[in-house]
Image (cartoon, rainbow, N blue to C red; front, side, top):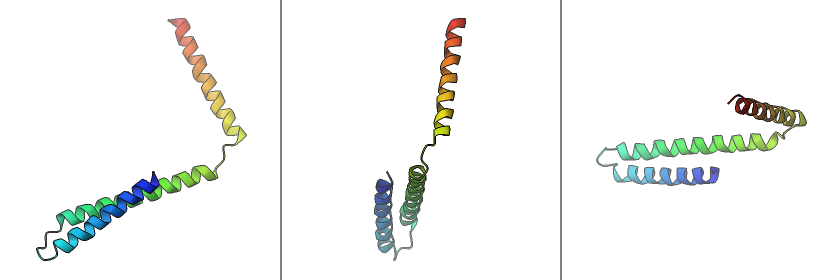
Amino acid sequence: MRIFLFALSIVSLLLAAHQFSLTEQTGQFKGALFFLLIGIQLLIAGALVQAHQEERSRKPLTSSDKGVYKESAQNEVNASLEQEKRS
């Protein structure tokens, strides 16, 4: 996902550079600014995705976390069974 975002960012920034070179004489930079802003946003999104993935891979699921997940799942099952009995 992050590689895809980085690739789109590079394409967008290249398009922005091309648009800037084409519109240098006329002074109409709207299209180039659009591609530049989209490229920056994609670059930031890719960096955030990468940071999130690294954080998740660094933090292993501890046994206490597994117990909490099992308890919440069991509570949901019990609640749904009680609702079915009431119906």
